[in-house]
Length: 161
Ligand SMILES: Cc1cc2nc3c(=O)[nH]c(=O)nc-3n(C[C@H](O)[C@H](O)[C@H](O)COP(=O)(O)OP(=O)(O)OC[C@H]3O[C@@H](n4cnc5c(N)ncnc54)[C@H](O)[C@@H]3O)c2cc1C
Image 1 (cartoon, helix red, strand yellow):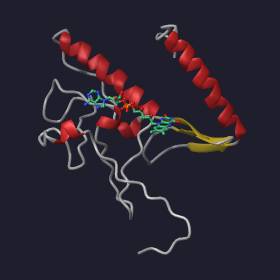
Image 2 (spheres, rainbow, N blue to C red; image 1 turned 30 degrees about the vertical axis):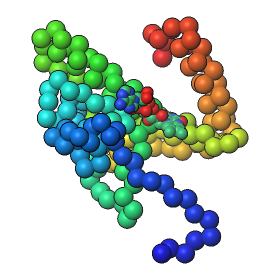
Image 3 (tube, rainbow, N blue to C red; image 1 turned 180 degrees about the horizontal axis):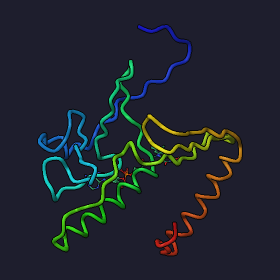
Image 4 (cartoon, rainbow, N blue to C red; image 1 turned 90 degrees about the vertical axis):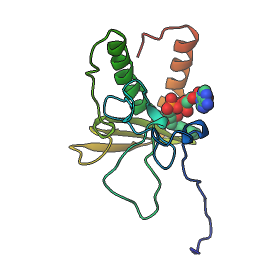
């Protein structure tokens, strides 16, 4: 029992139930083990990205929390996977590679009327540079992005960034 006056309990992240029935595909928590092409380790034609994909890290925190997965790496992985799937459909070898840890960190974290912009050259250390820029401008950026993104999707401008 840990002494505390205000606590928050976060349950462990677990993969989708329908995947846990495929132990040759997923790790103990139900995430698909993938290569840096986002093909599963076991099958060349089964891909997983984003939350569904397992991430290996060379350390363990005192409380095992797993790795937070955010929108930017998910989209980057999806681009890699899409190019490799297209190559496979054409009968070519998948040749796009990007380790999760090598994807840059680009995130705007919202927190009420405040927020933090998080930028780093790599998702996982060792990094050459990384910075946190706190302030209400992060919250405004988030609001602006939300309006832009909804406008983009509602109008089908998926070619825009
Ligand atoms: C509260 C919250 C705030 C967040 N804020 C940020 C942020 O500010 N910035 C950021 O970058 N990231 C943020 N994230 C993380 C980001 O949302 C995720 O990393 C991202 O959505 C992962 O994308 P994904 O496609 O892997 O999974 P998801 O977006 O979860 O997509 C999975 C899809 O699979 C569908 N699905 C599930 N099971 C089945 C099934 N059996 N059959 C068919 N379909 C199924 C689901 O309905 C869903 O549409 C936030 C996440 C949360 C929960």
